[in-house]
Amino acid sequence: MATKYQSLRGTKDILPEDSRTWRYVEGKISDIFARFGYQEIRTPIFEMTELFVRSIGASTDIVNKEMYTFPDKKGRSLTLRPEGTAPVVRAYIQNQLYQKDEVLKLYYKGPFFRYERPQAGRERQFHQFGVEVLGASSPAIDAEIIYLGCFILKSLGLDNAKLLLGSVGCSDCRPAYEKLIVSTLKESTSKLCDDCQKRYKTNPLRMLDCKNEDCKKQLKKIPSFAGSLCDDCKKYLNETEELLKLLEVSYTISPHLVRGLDYYTRTTFEFVYSGLGAQSTVIGGGRYNNLIKEFGGPSVSACGFAGGMERLISVLKNEGKIPSLSDGLDVFIAQIPANTETAGKGDECFKTAFKLLQEIRCFKISADMDYRNGSLKSQFRKANKLKASYVIVIGEDEIKKGIVKLKDMKTGNEENIKLDEATSKLKEKF
Ligand SMILES: [Zn+2]
Ligand SMILES: [Zn+2]
Picture 1 (cartoon, rainbow, N blue to C red):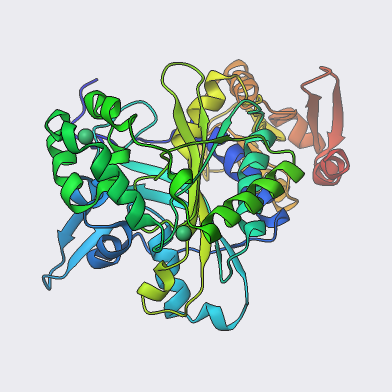
Picture 2: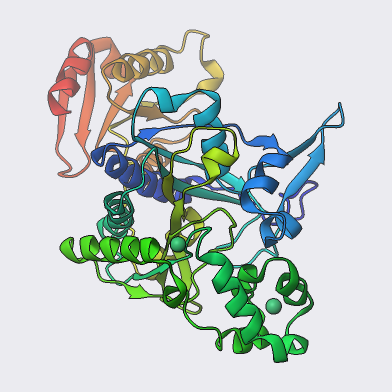
């Protein structure tokens, strides 16, 4: 049916059938975060535009093309958050969280916004979960958050995600690598896309993000970043690898893993899943050693990752890894006759049912009834639809005797119980 109002392109309603899956996945992830000692942080949906431009980088695709930026009534430029790290770093500094803990382990989840061409697993309002470990530089942190990503995927039943590991070096060794990129592509700049021709001059590392097939062919000529790392960065990568081996996490070194963000230093990683169709990144992250200081905070390093809920759920569905999730109701109350029109007008049956319904709920037992004038048959159909474990039938004759009928929907057994003992009887069953 054509409706007057439609949801916007790139946004989606998560309907009850699906929200059950979302709660299952979010619940699993939150439990694991707690087990690894992470605390939740919730930051606002919008921030000052400059926060994202300065952190993500002015020559990145996110800042150039994908941000939802708008002026507020006072003309200030605001942006709907396109990613989670910059807001967490802003909150870390603003609330001086660095004073409380040497190493702070935070996680977040929620909606993010990017103006992209919507496609499978990629919406304009999308949802991410992520972690940030702020306050220290140690390969143990990098290894642990990679292990954490691996642990989450395995706990959800995804054993085949491939881990790509890289390093984007530091301010000492990156300039030499950028020079190497420029000299490698010197003769072939004309074969690059317009964006890469600009990036070639302003920010050569960003060319490595390009999805253009012609560019990709040229980019293959560029040697791996690993070969240009300084001694400290090389050592850091080796130590991280050693710890991953200790934890039996298998990985592949990726030569050009720069991850579309300017703030990364040293470690970068991605978990990619190649199920049906194209390969997709389900979790990605890295280390950022300069961002906190650049934002006016103390000189401490940090490391984090983010995972995409839409992609993760679509992979889980494709792989058949969503268990059957039953939100079954404990008790359904049926009444004969069911007549809500006379409700409140002396219909004893309805009033008894309506009162009992609320009493049952007080004991943490889920309960519901039909509010329409349905036949007993249609009420049982509804009870089945709601996967009710028990049905209580209240009829006029029974009320006079002070009894109700209790039916066990699994076994089909029926028994008459005293109305005033109904809640205590049910309490025994749940
Ligand atoms: Zn370095
Ligand atoms: Zn390109």
